[in-house]
Amino acid sequence: MNAAAPLIDQFQRRISYLRLSVTDRCDLRCSYCMPEAQQFLPRKDVLSLEELHRLALGFIDRGVTRLRLTGGEPLVRRDMIELVKALGARLGQGLEELTLTTNGTRLGEFADRLREAGVRRINVSLDTLDRERFAALSRRDSLSQVLDGIAAARAAGLKIKINTVALKGTNEEEIPALIEWAHGQGMDLTLIEVMPLGEIEQDRFDQYLPLTRVRETLERRFTLTASNHRTGGPARYADIAETGGRIGFITPLTGNFCDGCNRVRVTATGQLYACLGGSEQVDLRAALRSADPNQELDRALDQAMRIKPERHHFAIDRAGAAPALARHMSTTGG
Ligand code: SAM
Ligand code: SF4
Image (cartoon, rainbow, N blue to C red; front, side, top):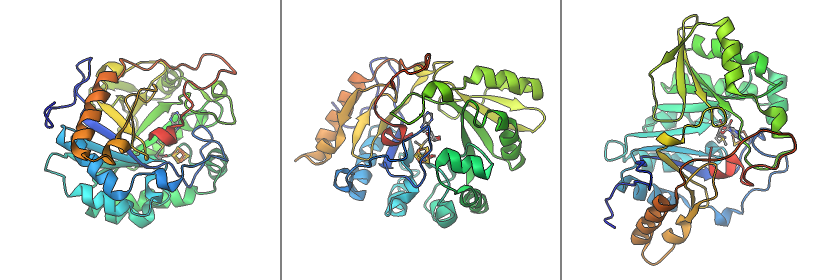
């Protein structure tokens, strides 16, 4: 296979977007994401800065134009800014966008440097504006740090999108207030359905809030108009007349969007997962550590295109069910 060949899967979907996890570690313990006593990977198994860089360049050479760094919490990795700088140097040379998804706790420290390295947009995950609820949900009393981080990122000139997981009986009532708050500061907000990934202490069925239901509630309060806006991801958007802002809906459970999938995910140990909801996997670390890394990486990417499944099949339809996959979102890279 020609090294410069674009990544196209067996369903003719062009893969132009990589979500690269730089660590599985995190300074929060969101109860829908991981258990309090999450076992993190031994550091020796995690890709080095050089390996992450080389891997990302391998994807860019195969036509990936958008790169999102994630985790775990990407900003807890010590050499994260060095990586962002190294990758930022490829912006305009194959790479069109470099971005990250963060819980925001460390943005106060890093926002300026992210912007200097070429990052323009980031996603910040925030499920509540209530300090006690935040502490209960994330098991850490860090809301003020996150809000300071968001303020620092805005001051640094980063465009922010807020991501909120809709959780039954937890932040359900607060969603309109979260939207008003985000839109009041010029930030879009996207709601996400909770996915059955990895064992946690709670039953997913008790957390799961279908966005069909949230949308009905929002429509009683606001005027929503379907929008053609797209960001190259699975979100579908609506404009809200009263706030002048935009709201996104990511509906893996109530509205499958796999037809337009343009992405793959790589864990911090270099395992490529062809689908967030599947176990199809290719070992890129072995390729990177082989005698001929460039050729082996290309081969591994071709293999990934052959095994990428048509769609995910997870569901949350009854209490007490085992997770669809043992892997947590923080391992795969959310
Ligand atoms: N720590 C960073 C953060 O929270 O933004 C990046 C990694 S986190 C795994 C990425 C996103 O996945 C977050 O928006 C988080 O809310 C979401 N997430 C985690 N577990 C999830 C689950 N089981 N279902 C749906 N979304 C989940
Ligand atoms: Fe950490 Fe993000 Fe998972 Fe929360 S959602 S525990 S911030 S990785």
